[in-house]
Each structure stands twice: as C-alpha cells, then as structure tokens.
Image (tube, rainbow, N blue to C red; front, side, top):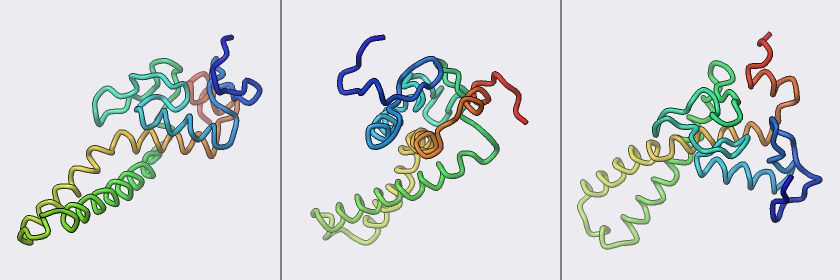
Length: 158
C-alpha cells in the first residue's frame, strides 16, 4: 500500500477494498465534502457517477455502492438544494441590486434578476446537493460491514 501525504494510515475506514476515508472527525468531513463538491463518489472518490447533469447513476462504476438506498432517500438532498441555492441566490441578488449601479435600475430589473437567480441556482446546485447528501449520510451514519454488503448488492434486503 502506498502512503498518501497528509493521511494518518492508522485512522482510516475500510470502504470496500480501499482504505480511503479517515475514520472520523474533520479529516473525514474534509474528504467527503471535497469529493461531493467535485461530483465524485463520496465512498471511493471515483469520477463518473453522473450520466448527465441531473442524472445520478444507480451505482458507482468503481466501488459498486448503491446510491439510491430506499424510496425517498434523496428528499433531504432536495431540501438541501432548495435552502442552499436560494440563500446563495438571495445573497447574490441583494449584492447586485444594492452593491452595484443596478440600484438605480427599475423594480422590473430587480425582479428579473432575483427571479432569474432563484430559478438558475437550484438547477446549478442540483448534482452537488445529491453528492453532499450522500456524503452527509456517510459522515453521520457510516455503513457497517453488513449494511455495506447490502449497499453493494451482495446480500438481499430484508
């Protein structure tokens, strides 16, 4: 096994066949959020988990983890998307309207900017909200051996 700079080899979780995640704490959160924001698999870090901007594959092509665990699993991702994207859109709109020369523009322009951002930001943030949701789930509730095997489809769901 090769040593990864900055990683303490004694503090990793085995995910599949790889020692890829620090076992806990800020280091684990940093790795998971970094993978999520780069649209990579939070479990193994592999690229290619999306088949399009809005389409997450059912399984990771590298580690074979199932992303859609149960019906309604991604409801939290939709809420995360709405909250983060609309907060960012509001901040950008207010900064543009009150912090630039757009202050003198008509109310119609202000509304156009705000509505445009309110529509565009959730669309832009959508894939990131899904990977962040998976990363949050992995951070707060890491799978045990049996549940990991179930996620990989190696044992039947009960």
